[in-house]
Length: 411
Image (cartoon, rainbow, N blue to C red):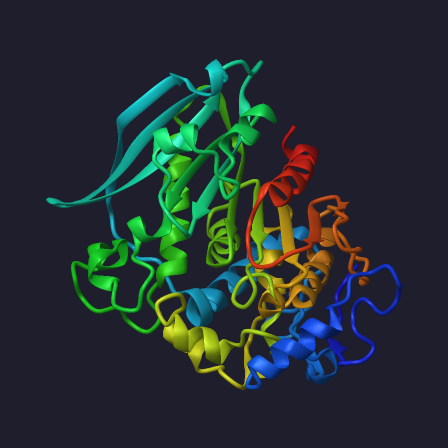
């Protein structure tokens, strides 16, 4: 199925085709509108918009085969996102090694081995390092799939991960379900603050020089770090590195999507409540906007993205094309009922608008335009989605829904 240029109008909205489909709570919409009048939470005020067709080149040519997609259009889209949204990673030669700093071979009553590691990057005589933690099941038969978690909140040391269960990264759940898992903290790679550039990997590669307008920013740097953790997982015999998912919540979810675009080794990308600059369509201008996100977090995106503040319709790309770039691999998107700031409808609509690319590449994907009911999962082929009750967060329910999806592709 090919995607024609589609004009989306404010009414009827996604979700009005079936009474059981999710809808934003009118009381919450009214409350948020009163609290933050400068932002739109009213579906009827979403402007009509036309999405760029991921299967039409900038020159207007229709992509009709997987070969044309892989040889032409995919690279063109990657370059557009590098130039306009996430920035371009540096072309600098470096060496990489890993050091183990702690180990527990009998974690969770002997169910897993956990290791605290350090990734060390060297350019000439300069080095940069960041820590991460890895757990592998002890009793698995054969090699296991794995999930890399981009933790945007805090670093979870080895002992803490074992002794203090954390629903944000529930290690024992992964082990029980037959997955290895690894996690690192974003700010250890590139500080998550406006003035953090001098202390991060981006400054290290630039040898302290200020970043150019189109140079990579923090989201891309964190995704690069996820790839370095994957480099390590490839050295572990009990892990099947061809079956590794990359995951994240909020800004970590934005990162996981882009990480999978840049690194085709990731078999699945999981975006949880990622919103603007992640899974949500920028053109909907619902909840967080390009203006708000590039003003509050200028270190996340390269400078050109901010030029589209208030004129999202001029963007040469939109976020459904990030999902399309991951095809034919797996993509899972999750939203939350009370997290209207992240625009659940925009996140779901983005997933649906990417379906024609999966189809072109011979894979099934969700095409149903009505959102699923609250708390019910929808899976078709390479894509999956759920929206749960509650606000902006990541917990056991989200993880178990995701692992249900991952089981269909990685086991």
